[in-house]
Length: 213
Length: 219
Image (cartoon, rainbow over all chains, first blue to last red; front, side, top):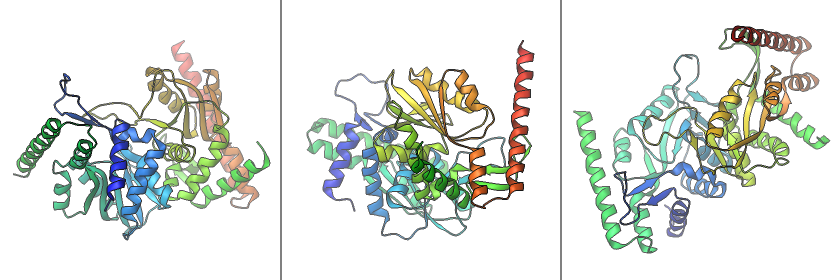
């Protein structure tokens, strides 16, 4: 588990880099969500990337696995964890049309090896499941999917229901509460944000149910 | 370059051969031609110490340039750029290979500002075409591209082409040098070395021919 101090440090870093930003009160906005999340911005802050890799390392080092894997969209984070802890890495590339001979999984690996997939977040459950499927299709065993952020809409639960272990270092709710305690957001804002989260979750579950039936 | 750099470079070449990031045999290229050698720098991620060594060798050249940001070209050079970024605390951005069709379809990922100078890092250079494709979106965002560093120059005219267009190309090593080092350390035979050299020469000639044809067609 993440210590309170580390968690606070992480949240401050996410907030200060603008990786997680909140819509100011009374600010006219074109988008629906009262916050913006762009964790890819962290790639431009090497020291913060190292810090985040350290958090992943703390969670992963007590587990049994052979390789870490990154999706093609997030090679820098996986590379940083690999370099910091000297764990060999592979990555899954996007599907390319035309070149049927191209490998989908890049790097050096053997069938039956255990893999921990690391990513900043699950933006799309179907994409994440496809990625896990490709690794399994290459003969690898999925040990776990490890994320930096779980927005709390229900995507991690859905992945868990498919039989995978899926964990996140931090949730969006953690971030809001911490920002509230640091007086970065008002009680009204916090209420609005938590209500929005709840509505997103409801919508997500509804969509899931529709897709399943 | 001083003697220590050359030693690091030789070590790097031998290790790249060891993990088969540089491999010899018969490899079918996308063009249909059969190549006697093949390079796959995407393998580096599976060997963190070697990834770091490659990054260190590139840094010896990079540290003499003035730049604000490092651009890593997916896929192979992105881990290398990340390794340099982490060790020397320089920010990276990267040009996406794929365009997202949902959400923010940005082609450049990371934090950057208009007018910043960037240096592009890539694994290999053939005829230089893919380098120019990388430059374009960067210039569209008003970033300044002067220097382009590649790990291996295949010897197919890309360096000259980029130079003619006004950029400063830097190749850490060439296929020619790699063959020499591997031959010197008895990793490949004289026949293998010569076969590769002939192949490179042929590719070069074929490349020039198609360029002439293209030039003639547009004239």
